[in-house]
Structures are given as C-alpha cells and as structure tokens.
Length: 465
Image (cartoon, rainbow, N blue to C red; front, top):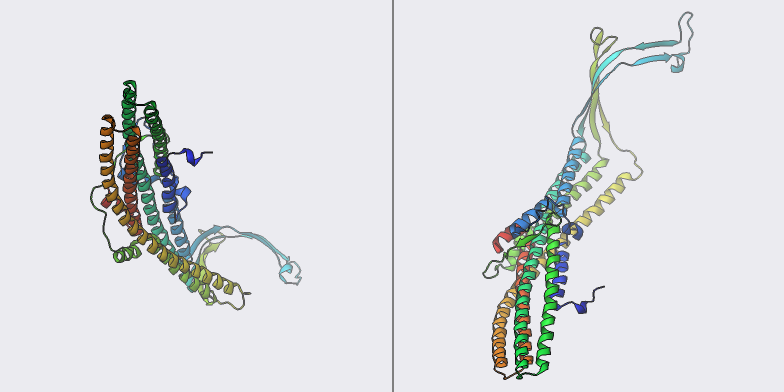
C-alpha cells in the first residue's frame, strides 16, 4: 500500500489529476472503454515523435469507446432494414415433386364400390411456384420503421459524441504529459540550485566561515528535491503509458511529445452564445432528442396494434405430370383484413411500456440540457479563473526568483546562513509549481469548453498547435 504522506506534493497532484480528468470526460461513456483501445502496428524499438494532432488521429482510429459506438451504429442500421422489410413484399420460389397416396375413407368418403379401391395412389406431379405476401396497410409497422430511422439518427450522433469524448480524453492525457515534463524540468533546475548551495556551504565550512548545520541543512534539502524528481519522472512515464493505451499505440512503443500550447489570451465567448451553440451542436443532446422522437413513434405503433391490417398473398406457377410437356398454369390470390377482437391485455401492456420508455427518454433530454448548462458555465468560470491564475503565477515566479537571487548573494557574502536560501528556493519551487498547475488548468479549461459547446475537434485546432 502506498502512503500518500510519502509522495511529494507535485507527484501527488499529477497522480490525482489524471484520474480526475478521465472521470470528467467519461460522463457519457464507460471509463474503461475510454482508457482502452485496439493497438495498431508494431513497436519500432525507437521513440517516435507524437504531436497532439497525431495523438488525436490515432485515438479516433483505435479508441475502444469510439469503435464500440461505431458498431452500435451498424446495429441500428440493421434494425432499420429489419423494420423496412416488414413493409415490403416477401417473394419466394418453390420447385418440387410431391408424391401422395390418399385413403378416401379417412377423408369421410364412406362408400364401397365393387372394383374400386378406397386407396388412391400413389401418384406424383411436378410444380414450380412463386409465392408472395404483400403488406398493404399496417400502421403499427409504418411507425416502427419511422422510429427505427430516428434510432439510426441517434446512433450516428452518438458516434460523433464518442469522437468528441475521445478527443477530450486524448487532449487531456497529452496535456498531462506536458505538465509532467514541465515539472521535471523545473525540479531538475531546483536540484541543480540545491546542489550549488550544498557545494557552497561545504566550501565555506571547510574554510571555517560556516557551521556544520548549514551543510547538513543544504544536504537535506538536496535529497528532498532528488526524491521528488524521481517520483515525477516515474509519474511522467506512467502518464505516457496511459496516453498510449488511450490512442492504441502498440505495447512497448515509446514516443516523444511536443508542447502544443499556443501563446495568447484565453478565448472569449459570452455565456448566452456558448449555451446557444451547445444546444445546437452538442451531438449527445441531439441524439437524446432523436431518441425521444423514436420513443414517441413507438408509442404510436403500440396504439396502432388495435388498427386493422390489410395484406395480399398468393402464388402463381405451373404444375403437371411433367413440367415441360404436360403442365398448366395455376394461381391463388387473396386479400386479408385482420383486426383485433380480444388480446387479453397485450396491446394495453405494450402501450404502457412504450409510455414509460417515452417518459424516461424525455427525462434524459431534460437532465442532459441541465448538464450542458452546468458544463458550459463551469468551463467558462474555470477558463477565466485559470487565465487570472496564470497572470498571478507568472508575476509570483519573477518575485520569487528575485528574492532567491538576493538570498544567494547574502549567503555568498556571509551575511546570512542557508536557512534563508533554502526558504527562498522553496518559494521559487512553489511558484513554479503554481505556474505549471495554472497553465495546465488553463489548457484543460480550453479543452472542456470545446467539448461543452460541441466543437471538440475544431477547438483543438483553434486553441493548440
């Protein structure tokens, strides 16, 4: 068991953040599916360059969540074809040679004529027939076909929604790696600075101008930084593995990333415009509305089971002792109207079930509309907050570096001891951590806003390069 108290603060934040990201983007999909993929290709043995755009394209080809939704879309197409088949004629052919022998007494012909047997046959004939059943009117099946069309529309929109979720998951995982890399660079610089202080304190101690506690204090701080660096490098590798699983890299394939963040201010959009765009373009919202229409049509189809149905059926062909020499055309045609008299409550049960399904789907739409409002508002708030935090964090880094420079000068001049230098270095490290975290949150807010308004793929191109 890992004790959280033994994990450095930055490593703990990295560990928790990736879980939070995946939980956030999996609101409409299984987390396991978003984290899974179907690996493509074979490992090259050397690290490959991987940009954010390339990572997204790989994810859109291999992520398990998207592949599953695509197959569900194909199943919806099959259901629509099945519903259509109930409205189209059904034609089949039949070729055969029946052989029969009849007992006339068994058929009720109870007479006895001398010299005439009650057994007829065996005899045979050949026949070739075309059988057809033609639905003429079935209002229930018509509505089921229309419902299947809206279910297919919903399935297609669900595929697009899955694409947006995959884009968000890939972008967040990629940005997590960029943040990890920035932490490593910053911590390595802190380790180098701590080592310089330790060397300086050792030299002054050897020269008799510093006490041993200064050397010990500098060495403790150096070891603490080195421990944090080890943990951050490990977390960086784990987060790379997470991204590789999401986008379907072959097992064991290493890659190098590039910082995709673009300079400039955060995007500005009003709440009214963002909500209007979200309600218009969010594929999950449009898919939910299509499911409501499908449920309404299924309710209509259930009620229409009480209506009469009309169909024609029959056959046409030829039969005779010999098909090609002694045959004659034969046919049967009939029209049938079927209507319900008593069904024992089956139709009522179908109507109640369809009613319940319609209410459930309408509740889903209403809930999703509220969820979209929440996501858009949260994304805009986080975007503004993260932008302000980045400005403050950058200013704080400059101030902390100035204070550290003055402390180092005072220590070199023998005016102060290592306590002041160590404290100044800790302030610089904390300022750097805050800046990296603020920039990371700003990037996440951009991704979240793109997803919230329904333009995840286009948003990646607009906000990152």
